[in-house]
Length: 502
Image (cartoon, rainbow, N blue to C red):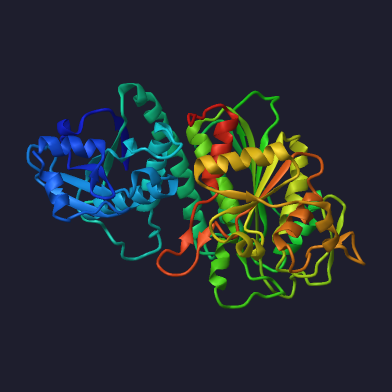
């Protein structure tokens, strides 16, 4: 897909299609009014006849509108003008792109980027139009023997901006939108891969491939021998029951001065989670291939960072393993000595993500990080608490939490903060070890983060629980969402002063 921005009047556009908005009830946007004027009332006459009301997502495709140079005009219902918000804007863009793709318009000039969206500027509207377009056109058909081909797919879209002064901002928005969309695609592609292909070794290959994209990137892959020498017994225990050995990939991106402390991203990469000896129910277990979406999102974020060449140092860790039951698998009742020296009683082998992450979080101390963010499909309790709309956020540092929340609002990739109070730590008590790996049913997302917090006392840390947001379940829409690549990339854009949102 090719994207660009321009500033022009609709009557001068020679294109396969011009896209303009119509508000409820049957009220033309400013650009639609211009087209109506040059077509001598052709559009307003159609609306009076009842062809389009202007409700959100309504579409009316017109051919050969009098005196209009473009072949087609697509009228898009935008709802009530004062009620047009971020969510509705993205929905309108998605419906528009689907319509264009299905109706043979291989290129289009879109004036929806000039609509008034509450509290949002040209940069935001153009960037989110690019991201939404790429999301809407995404398909994962790598493993299908017969692929559905669109006969005349949409190949080029131009977003119009109000004035020539907005062109630079619009171009920056397209650049950012494309980089983030590429990161999201990377995350989705890896997340959607089946577990017989996407193993810990496959994730390590994907990480290593990043080093070919930029001379600022280097990658080291730690296997069982290296992790064993480091004392990462908790991490290794989780992968012991699988023939696919654990691999931990460490990606270093040097975008700033050598002595500048890095931002560290740690992604949970359970390429398949059967639950181990504490076996999960069979229904829906196929979706446990998505238990590596934390690692996939970190991989996708690094792809976006490389594309944007952000001036920041980053260390990204993909903590990959497979949790399977066999004669060598770890058991409920086992006590593991973590890399930090703390001991953990295993009450349930399906609470394995924290056992992998805790050693990875200890490992990253060596980088003297400015901050650490871990991303994990960690708890079903987070799905119960927040559903599929918001990722759970917990942190030991208020300014970091606020930065992430701000980035989540800007990116539309929302998070919601949960408490990390000491009172919850009591639920992890064990009579046999320093603590257990399970805090009971109550406040499961919080107690999982409490567990991780015991390994993050030496730095500022935040935890994103993406169990509800990382993938969609069931039906034809099943698959990875690419979240929270947009949130993490926005966070990094903000930190490097690249933001154009205000």
